[in-house]
Image (cartoon, rainbow, N blue to C red; front, side, top):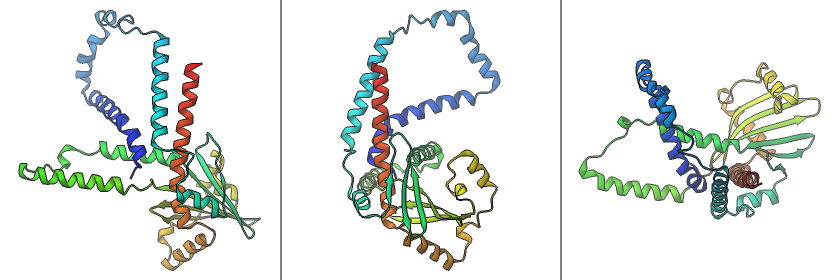
Length: 293
């Protein structure tokens, strides 16, 4: 479920994307003969003369000014939604009490947590790109609904159902949960290769999806396109869900002992939301400064 801030930001844009998508689909769905007949007048000289630039002429200075004002209003809106300099308790407690060291480079999508555990180096990384991908998936699911798939209540039932829908909406707003956050965990030992664990942080839980082993630690990190390509050709191990249940539990305890705990599962989605907000505001400021220059 998206946070209230993300919903508020994306709501007006969603309508625009839906309308433009519907327009593109209506054009693509036409048979070729209809395309020819309907688009033929657009190529006529009469239409070309009617579509003159003078009809829609607007000076560059006016457009720049309008765009600058709009960017400024977006900045004010984002600032009113959340104070990015104030961390929630989950983030503050984790940063103060966790053995992990946070690396968050401004302008970058990825966030990295590192720590030492005996002779092991443990790296946990996640990306704010998950937030955008989650929004796009949510929008796609909304667009894929067909009218005939929606149950239309009878006249006598509409009032009661409308009240129930309002109650459900209010309940959803009061029970907002962070967007799921994908974690890439790498446990390295000198000269012994690395374990690469793909997990999901959601609802305060760590859910392991894959548990890989690589003799070359570089393949576990996949920092370049070349290493990622090489890693695809290496057998890393069976799917985690196919392992013996006791083995799965022991591997989960192995991660928990190294700090991949419920505290991390709560921290990562919350921090991902904070970083995305900060990066978006910085992007707005940079674009506005460029337009105003």
